[in-house]
Picture 1 (cartoon, protein in one colour):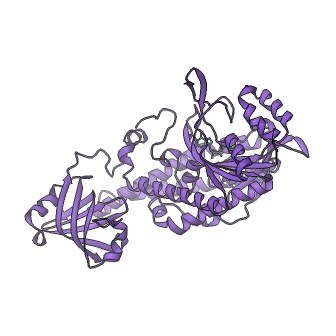
Picture 2 (picture 1 turned 90 degrees about the horizontal axis):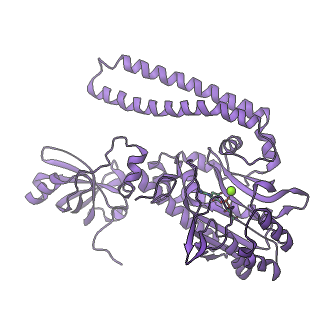
Picture 3 (picture 1 turned 45 degrees about the vertical axis):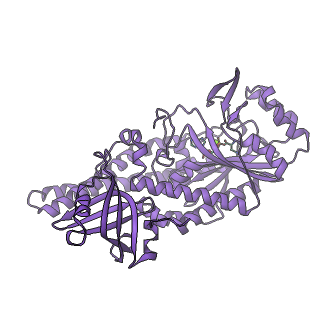
Length: 502
Ligand code: 4AD
Ligand code: MG
């Protein structure tokens, strides 16, 4: 439809024209007879110039009254100005207050994680959060684009289910009219049924895990994308995962540069990461790499590098502090700003220097057969710039439905994709077991109620075929692409241990 106002994102197409802009006040400053309003409208931010002698009295008063996040309407002329964000500004002819905001709780100063989490409904308006949600949106559309382009059918798997998929320890149980039910942990099993009807499908929906651990990677509610392909084996499955990831990276590098810049993301790292083919390592090769001397040397070098950086930053801080007393006001402000930056980086370094010796120790003592912990994944991926595919894990650390490696019965034909830069597992999947008796035995061995899986066993009774699939955790992918330290900033209203509101 044609909107009766113009969005910030489209202002460039309206240079020298008069437009109406609706939005919220992000920031303002002024001097005698002149005010600059930074107005955000959801599509971007633009500077509005209000001159006392060019607007009526009511508009001038309105522009002075506006508090942070007040809503407003501006009419004005779009003027090209390359120094401004987006290359334009608006010279106002009128300013109207729509709703004056009460003192806004989120200000440019530093706020704690809990403070912001409690105000997530408002925090979403902040620049970084805004940019992250836009990147999330681009990732979602890239995923649909990839699968739709490859002839997959999107399916909506049920959210209320009668069976576990990924073990029983993380189930959210509820009472379904007297019968126990669970919020789905994964749409995979229902996806397998749909793949037998359509050949290639993918789910894109919410999944739930009652994760009792507080980590930067775990949510209790997260969105998973689960393709499932009939007549695919493990190698083909890995190719799909690789292609899909490259499609996502291509999309954000093409369309999300401005958002990634707001997030301070080093896009060079993402450019390096999209270079397929990604290395494929067996679990056993990954263990060898983890426990190698090469890994110890790499981590020692990292520790030495961080210690040097720490010393240099402390020197810089001491030197500028020594000169602070005599400095002019502007210089003082710059010293203060730099000190905040230095302190932030020093905190990161301290944390890394605390972790690295433990990582070294845990890497060296890792024993074949165990599952990788978060730090093990980080250490393994430190050797690569791209995501890596690790396959053929010990069957004991994987789910009941995994097919065994015909060459080594201890191994499951499962695969994980580990992202670089410490982001670790973003994808888990594999080839599915097809043998009915094997599956029955596995369900029993995993302590799962056999009757709840009768329908699933039917898939092996009626035209069983080799098939494979995987699950991508959307929030982990968003965290990685955006370079966010924690998944709590990757969902509009994240759900995690201790966080149900707002
Ligand atoms: O490795 P997972 O548990 O695999 C499955 O659920 C399979 N049924 C998928 C399949 O083969 N169709 O989970 C898949 C991905 C993980 O790699 C991770 O990215 C994400 O889902 N994930 C979580 N993300 C956020 N918070 C959690 N608690 C997550 N648990 C898994
Ligand atoms: Mg997994």
